[in-house]
Length: 196
Image (cartoon, rainbow, N blue to C red; front, side, top):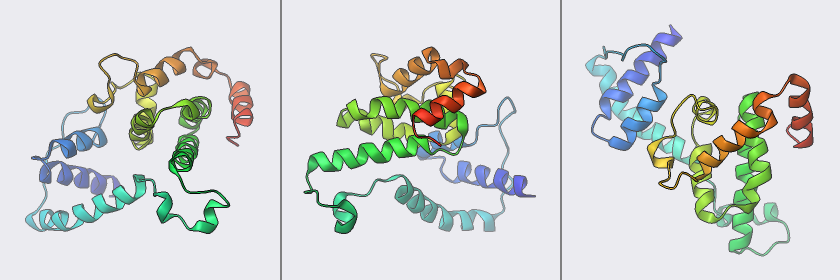
């Protein structure tokens, strides 16, 4: 029953946003069903009307979820004795990105993405942080499939030169011992990077 409801919701979203290219790409990514064929819609008119009401609310919740707050939105007591400036905002953003990369909820992604972030995010420029943030905002299963080369990099994250953040993460994962690690190595790496 729940699987059918999720399936129907994915179909409804796919149908109602057919004219919005950005949403289409998102829905196709979210509607990934392995080697199975495309689904067919069987939504009633009432379900389509409900979807029109629910979709903007869902998009607003998603936007709040993935957006980092500005320093002006954070209570002064939480910032400590620091002066608010661009460097502090960039530093806070880096720390939040490392945290989000480490806390995906899936061990393999926590280790691969979290370890890479712990080692590299402090050296990223603001534009590279934007690219990494877009990658971190993806679904965990999609991140895993991209890092492990099971899925192509989305067009909006690809770079012409081939040395973008996602390409660097893929190359790092391919060559890092974590890509071939045994359980003891996982435990050691997780401990050394404060992931447990």
